[in-house]
Image (cartoon, rainbow, N blue to C red; front, side, top):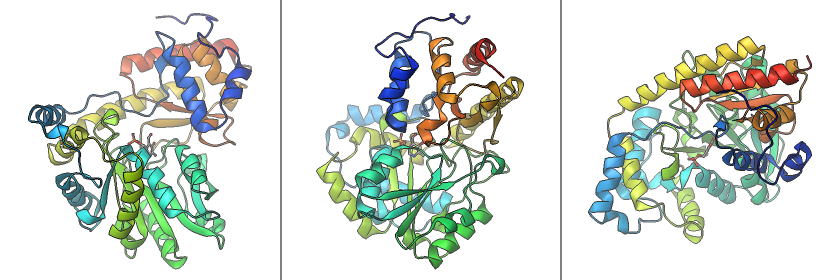
Length: 402
Ligand SMILES: Cc1ncc(COP(=O)(O)O)c(C=O)c1O
């Protein structure tokens, strides 16, 4: 395949300024770009963060069985299927060292609903929450709609975007109620080291802060980095809300099953809001998630090996293009700096989509100040990634001014 030179973008948005105008915030920008890419038949999407791999076969079989024997027809309890909540509590104990029972587990419509419910229940107007910058910008809306105030805590490329305890401490004010941790992080692929996480836990205890720990990418951590759950550390279980789900780990985004664990009283508050809004998660998806969590886990290694190879393909190509990045420690994103091209990242994304038919998100979709950055996901087969990289090179060679 070759790049179709200067081919126009189909759809209503055709100019860079029009695109800028519709993208009022990070989430809108991501969706506007995805809509445009959907209209380009040969577009290669390196935008979204949803795994392209298939869910494990035993998961699909479990869902089919639930449909066949009528269990999928039944409305699940608002908190989630008891067997699934039990399996989640056991998983959290076994893999994450988080003790607790099924009482402290809520099954949600993806991690997305979980994070939204948490912010609505936790934050009162004026409460401050410390959030790593750049960040998964869905948190912005959830926090704003709860009346909370997001206080951005910088993370640095030179430190591979690890969120540091001292940076958090410097941002605490009398209004601070909570700290949001996302490790591995989206969009930066930064991972919080165990030593630093211990310091964050001590800070949370000392300053009496609640921690929300988004661990949705926990299965994608590149050694020597490692994953540690903050709720397993002394004094943390009672002040931590741990968020997770099967979307990323088991390549099950479309099934929409997330979960979170917290104090049982808090879980009941969340369930009250959930009952008034989305209701329970579809039973069929919960049976599938149960199979994912209790079935063979070797598929996780297979997925990880695939992501690791792709990551290397991407890093080698970015090096060849002269683009720098914070070395990705986890997840399946690379946050890369394009200032060496002389082009702004937003403009470059536009050109990549318009001329190269490659969808990549600008860093500004994850934080206003990241005007020189792109988030590239590698959720495509290796061959497709190579094609996307070749197209990127063609577009860059044509437009780079530096
Ligand atoms: C950091 C983070 N948390 C939560 C989610 C929500 O995931 P889902 O709703 O697919 O489970 C995402 C999705 O991209 C994410 O990146």
